[in-house]
Structures are given as C-alpha cells and as structure tokens.
Length: 598
Image 1 (cartoon, rainbow, N blue to C red):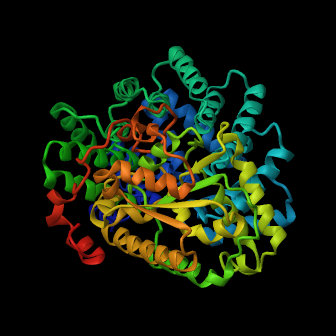
Image 2 (image 1 turned 30 degrees about the vertical axis):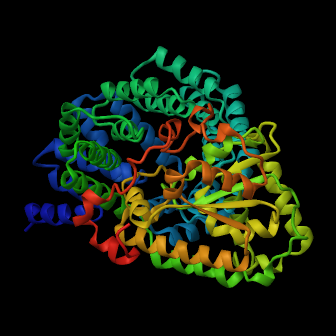
Image 3 (image 1 turned 30 degrees about the horizontal axis):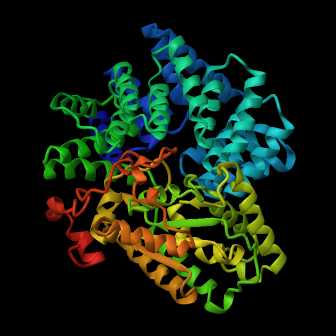
C-alpha cells in the first residue's frame, strides 16, 4: 500500500540535506499530484529548475498549466518540451546525467555520440558545459569556439561561447561575439542584454547603462536588468542611482534575492525594519527559489549585523553558507593538495631572471578575498604611472591551458623551454592590453593569483607582486559573510576557510623562500595605522616616485567592480577592524584552526 505521507517526510528530509536534488522535487510532485495541485506544481517546477532535462516533470507541468489556463507558463513549458524532444536520445540522456551530477558518465555518453556524429552542435555544447563544470575551461573554450565557427547562425552556440568568454575574463572577445549576435538579431532582448553585460566586462559602462536603460524604458518589469543596471552604476561610482535600481528590482519581484543582496553588498546600505521583515517573509515562502533564498540569507545577515544583532545575523550567515555549500562539490583537502603541488613544482633553482618576457609592466596584487586588495589597487591606480584594471583572469587562463598536457600543471612548468616561457609572457601582455590606458605600468588584482606566483615569475620575471594580507579572524570571517558571484568555494564553511587561510600562509612562506625579495607583503592593519608610511613603502617596492594622489586615493574616479567599491571611495577608516568580535561565541571552530584572537 502506498504511503505518500511517509514518502513526503522522507523526501523533505532528503531535500533539506540536498536542496538542489532535482529528482527529489520530482518525486514530491508525484506524491502531491492527487492531493495538492499547487504543491505538486511547485515540486515539478523546482525539479525542472535544477535539472531542465527532466522531460516527465515538464509534461506534468504542461498538464497543470493547461488545466489552470496559465498561458505564458504553458508556452514556455511547451517550448522546452519541444527542445528536449528534438535532441538525440543519447544527448538527452547525457544532459540528464550532467544535471544529476554524474559528469563522468555524461562525458562518456557525449563523446561516444560524437564519434559517429562529428560536430553535432548540441553534443559539442553539452560536452563544453560538462568541461566547464569539471573546470577544464580550455577544452570548453575550444569546443564552443569551434561550434560558433561551424554554426554561425546558431545563437545558442554563440550565447554559450560569449558566456564562457566572460567567465574567463576575455571580455573584449565577448564584446565581439555579442556584436555579431546583435547584427543577426538586432531586436532580440536577450542579445541586447548580453552585449550590455559584455560592455560592463570591458569597462564601457556608459554604453552598457544606455542599453539597460533603453530596455527598461520599453518594459520596466525586468528585475534582473534593474540589478544589472545597478551593478554598472555601482562600478561607475554612482551608488545612489545603483541603490535606486536595486530597489526598483524588488518592486517587480519581491522574492528576487539578488536585488536584496546587491543592496547589502554596497556595504553602506542600511535596511529598515520593514525591509528586514519583508526579506524574512520571502525567505519563509515555499515558492522562493533556492538561489533567492541564499541571497536573502546573506542580505539578512548584513542587515541584522548593521542593527547590532550578532546572533540573529550569524543565524542567517550560517544558513546562507550552509545552503550554498550543499550545492557545491568542494573538497578542501584537494585544494590543500593542489597548493602543496606548487611547492613541489617550484624551487629556488627553478627561476631565472633571464628567461620569460622581460616586460616590467604588470603589478600583481594577490592574497585572499576581503583582505584589502581593492584598497591597495585604488592607492596604486591613483598614481600617474599606473593603470588600474580589474580582476584579470589571464594568468588563470594560462595555467588552465597548461593543465591539459601529459604532465599536469604545475609540475610541467619546469619542462617549458625559454622560448615557450617568453611566448606565454608575451601572450599575457597582449591579452591584457585592452584593459590598459597609457600608463607604463598596470595592476592585475586577481587575488587567486597567489597560487600561481611561480608561473608568473617564470613567464614575467620582472613583474612586481604585492601580497595583500589581513589578520586571520577578520579576513576569514569577512569572507564567510560574503556571497561571491563565482568561485571562492572554500568560503562557505568556517572550517574550510580556516584551512584555506593556513594553506595560503604556507604557500606564501614558500614563495618568499624561493623568490627572496620579489614579493612585498602589505598588512591591511598597517595601512590603516600608517597610510603614508605604507604608501611610500609600496611605491618604493614598485620603483615609483611618491605622489600625494596615492594618499587621496578615494578621490580617484575609475571603474571598480569588487564588493569593496564603495568603501575605497572613502578615506581610511577603522570600523572594519575586529568585526568578528561580536560573533566570537559562534567562531570557536575558526579560532581553533587559524589560532590567536586577532
């Protein structure tokens, strides 16, 4: 005899542990089908969100939408069903496997299909998506570039290629793809949004803002576009207009978590009690999507922290981190192993100042997120001889391209000849040229480049490297409070972030040993206590003359796209110090890992 109540209880428990488990939601939909049509629809809808290849769930939704006469939802549902039915069965099956987390099986099915169906566009796009999930980005880029070239009229391929280029930080290339798409579909809303996103990537903010504004003038009921407009305005430094755009998004979608988090992520916005109540209400609704719940939790954490409610704030920070972590497949032990591999690959004898590209142009600012790197970037970018850019992905891309050799990266770097090292350095200089203006030096502020200092000094021996460091408790807890747009998967657990901090310190100690004098460590607290002294120290390390504009860094107008954008447009202040203290009762696990109380 069927026992739906017991099944529902088991499924609810399962979904609480795995909140993105599509088949669990699908089974919930079936359990509710004969007793609660609304809950059934919610179950099937959530199932299709986490696994868009679940054809049976789409068909159940189709029947429900027909019965309820939901024409717009029905149209979208039928379009998806038609698309899934158009796929070859092996590709449909592989898509299902991929969304189910079975990446290896999905890849096998996909590759087997391609052996007899060479250059099939859907198979190429799927294999590229699997590659992205496995973080084999160079393979994914090759596949999508090939697909884009072979099928120039396939906008799905073009959109996927553009999206990957943006993810890899190749924004100038993304702009070119977006412009080509727009030529083919000049009235397409999605294509116009894609072009605006690409313009933001290269820093053409005015052009992006014009596109977003025109689209919203035609139809203001576009909450995601309001948020995108807000991001562009915030990067430009127009925070008040950015806030208005974020608030506008919530008018059209009260459960749109990204809008609330974007407000919180200005770091200066103060939520009213009414707003906090509204966010809690949206979080409690069963209809609120998982991604919105995660954003709402982080926004509530920030809002309650600003109110002085540390316990309430930590509750939501912890909940948001927990939900986010359950959607990831992150293993801190694997990361520690990868960082240790850098120590094995690079010894003091590995380096030669005579090899590689001899350009002195780059100044790398590395470290952990939320450690003060944006402040150092703003100080240096205020110098007349230094261009500020953004968090450039080019070193990560070069490292990724070296990962596909017989000997894995970084162990294969030592076997690269002088010419190969020079070409890689020249490739980096060429790729970063579009982000520069006319100054002789430029900043690459990608924090994760601390992992690749060995590679950097092999291909760019004259590059300057500055390590932005912050006291462990402040740095780790600040990272734990931050919902990152992409990457930084170590930050969603206090244990993981503590272990990552220690692994970072250990690797930096290694770099200082094998590259004596080549890295300047700048302690964030020292900058707060003695700005002028630290500025002179930084400029001296970079071989730059002192300029008072570096002390007045907050007056410098430039594009800033990191969470600290608004903070570094203000003079030095001490309020960010020891922000973890009110939360101390909840941070024993972190303290036990990083040690000390600072």
